[in-house]
Image 1 (cartoon, one colour):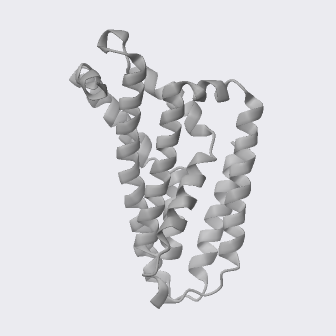
Image 2 (cartoon, rainbow, N blue to C red):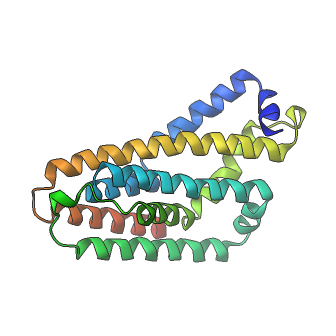
Length: 208
C-alpha cells in the first residue's frame, strides 16, 4: 500500500521533503494571490473555499504526474503553451468581472457560492501548466527504488504536498478575507483590488 511505501522513506528524507514543500507553499505565487484575491473580494469564507479549490487542482496535477501524463504534456511545448494561454484568458475574464462588479454590499459578505468559488480555484490551478513541470522536477528527488514502487512514492508524496499546500493557501485566503472586511466600506475598492490581482496573475502566467 501507498502508506506502507511512504513508511519506508527515511525520516530525515521525509522531513526534508515536508520542509521544502512548506517553503514553496508559503512563497507567494499564483495560488496564494488567487485565494487572497477571492478572500478580499468575498470575505474569509470565499478565500478559504478558493484555497480548497486550488488544492483540488493540485491533486489533479499529482494524479497526472503519477500516471505519467504529466511527462507527456511537459514533452510537448505547444500543449503547455495552449494551457498557459487558456489559463491567462480565464484569469483576465475574472479580472473583467471583478472590475465591473461595482460596490461591495457588506451584508452580502457572508453569502458565499461555495461550488462557484471552488470551481474557480480548481480552474485557476488546473489551467496553470507550471505545476506539471514543478511536480515532475520536485517529487522524484525524494524517491528511491529501494523504498518501494516509484509511482506509489510519487503519489504519496504528492498527496502530502497537496495537503500542506491546501492548508497554507486556505490560510492566505482567510487573511485576504479579513483584510477585505477592513476595507469593504470603501465603495468598490475591494473588487478593483481583486481585479488588478487577477489581471496581474494573467500577465505573469503569460510572461514567465
